[in-house]
Image (cartoon, rainbow, N blue to C red; front, side, top):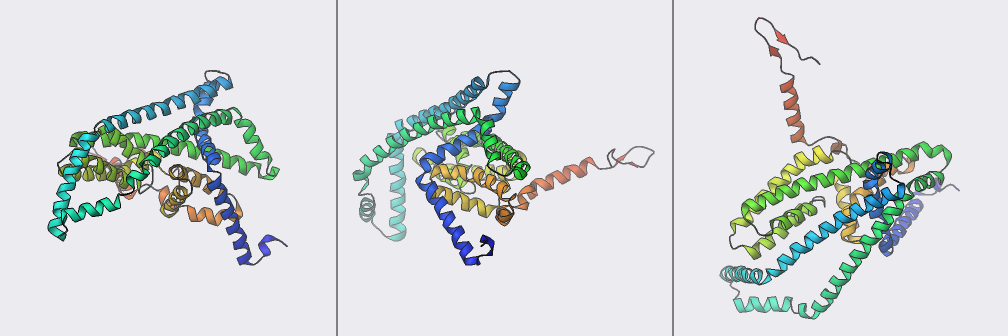
Length: 386
């Protein structure tokens, strides 16, 4: 019997079982899957540089692949070194941070005592009960931190090796993907591969450019406000901004918490919220439509669901991998008849268009360019292209 002829509830049960098996495979195999997916995305991003070195500079394929991987590792190493230096400076200021934080806590306790009539002694008892297990778990936290650092270094080395090998064997991998399908599907497979590569490259390059601009704007705003750790907070908030919708909120909260421990002026907090919201408005209405554009045509609902599922199943890596993976899945779904409804559900026609504010400005500029030119002694002169 054909699968499509089975009752709907049986088909749905089989599909649900398949999705559950895939999720279990991702959760239990994340140590293998996560570095491999990162390597695929990094390889696609580095592919234009590799082609340039091979075709324009005539370098051997192995040398070209090794060069781009070393350059990528150098950039990643520089970023890790930069953040470690900033964190080290931050840790050296812990005595001052603790002193300022105690002043803010005292102010907060006096306010709670005046408003809710809870004495300072009772508040201290509540805080001690809530944090009673901190000393017991401190050793575990240190060991977990050391494990995370070791795990991250191992991931970076593994991603570098994977990326080199994927770039080296990319033509064989492409032939393999085409060969596992029937010959009649070869044009569609080629189209999916080309579009997936184009979307991932465009999306990641646009995202990096947007992140750099947002980081500069954040650092400038924090510098004008007079906050400490300007570069660290500006870049860190720009990185969090990659996470759709919730990243900017996390960045604002983290910056406020750090500022509370370094500044006694509450107006700094207000200016941070105002400046970050203005930067987010500029990013959403100008930078995102202009730079990233419509490369990833995923609607907001699917984006949030994908980020939540990725974070729940894999953690922080899943949050950053969610959007590129969903974009590639949509390309595949749009070209398989049985999966086209899912591709339609994931898409968003409004994302293809630019933001309303950006469109209004573009229309105004277009009308201004097409405004009739009147010369003395003659009627209106139409624009050349009208």
